[in-house]
Length: 195
Image (cartoon, rainbow, N blue to C red; front, side):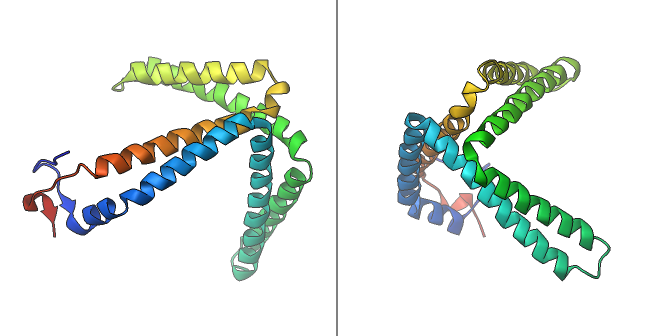
């Protein structure tokens, strides 16, 4: 890949990118492997994902509570304290029964996909925007995905979250692999560098 004079790059950033291409490759391969395992063991990866969400909420709640005491002179003390306690309670609730909460999160996910798909299709039809066909297609696929998840609920709660995490990890991994392979082909002239 040769960059033309239209593209100006920071020389150190490009060198750093090329020097770390092996790490991108390893990270990409690891992400593809983990994503594949998440697809194979979708029920277990769903439970792990839900547990992670629970832990994340508890940690966010603790930080919010600490922040409320650091901002106690501001009028938002009780708001931050209430939100922090709410996060901690919600996180413990999710953490205490991940299987049950996987069903709830899957239903919320299905509703989100349905509403998001309808809104994208609607905006594609009423707004004058470039590539409206792609936006409409994106909305249609999102709507269909939401309806499929909804149609198979509550059974879909056993596998949907883990499957989506696996697919995301696989696509992220392949993106990093391709980025790493492309970085080895970069050739830059001195005229392309910015100082």
